[in-house]
Image 1 (cartoon, rainbow, N blue to C red):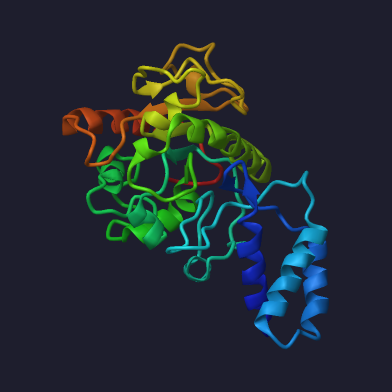
Image 2 (cartoon, rainbow, N blue to C red):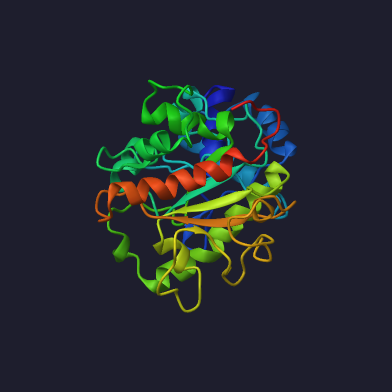
Length: 305
C-alpha cells in the first residue's frame, strides 16, 4: 500500500469490523488517527502486510470507546453495509466509509432480519429478484414515483438514506437465507449489538430515527423476553426491554401525536417482503402503504420529497 486512499480504505474496513456481541461494530477513529497515518505514509513499510498491521495498530491506539462506532461494512462477499446516509459509487466499490454525506436524523430506519446470501454477495440489501422489497416500496409510495424511477436496486439502496431520509440495516449482520436457522440464543445475543448500533447512529446523526420499521415480524418478536407469540403489523405500543429510545406508547397508535414525539422513535412492524411469506399481495401492500402515509406526515430537514 503506497497511497493515502488505499491506507484509509484499509483503515475504514478495519474500523467497521471490531467484534461485538457476536456481530460486528467498528470503533470510530479520532482525528489523531489521520495525523498518525499522514506521518506513517511519509515513510511507508516495504510490504502491504506490514503496512496493514501498522494501520490496525494506529487505529487501536487512537480509537476511543465513548465515540459513536462506524456503520458496519462486510469484509466478505460484495461488501454489504448499513446505510444511514448516501454511499458514493467509489466508497461502495472500495468498501470504505463514505464521508461525503453526514448522517442526520432519519425519517425512518428499515430493519431487516439479516442479509440474505444473495444480498451479502451483491452488497445490496434485498437484491434477490424473488424479494418484493423494492417493488413494494415503489408501489406503496415510500419511494416517490419521480425519485430515480429507472434506478437499479444498488443505486436505490446506496441513495435512499441521503435522498429520502430512509436508512437500511439488519438485526443480524451475518449472511443466510434461512431465518429459522438463527435460534433463540443467537437472536438474544445479537440484541445488545443491534441496540448499540441504533444508539450509535443516533449519536452520530444527532437524533434517533422518527420511525424504526421492522421489515419482518420475527426480528421484532425476538427482542422480547419471552419472544412475542403474535404481533400485528403497524405501529407498536409495547416496547421490548432495553429499547434504546423513548417510545410513543402513551399516544394512541397511528395518531398524529403518536408520530410526532420530539426525541421519540415509533416502532413499526411490517410483514416480510420475502417471496417465502404467504400473504395476499393486497394485504401486504396495504401495510406498506400505511407506513408510506405515516412517512408523508413527517418533516425531514431541508428536503423536498
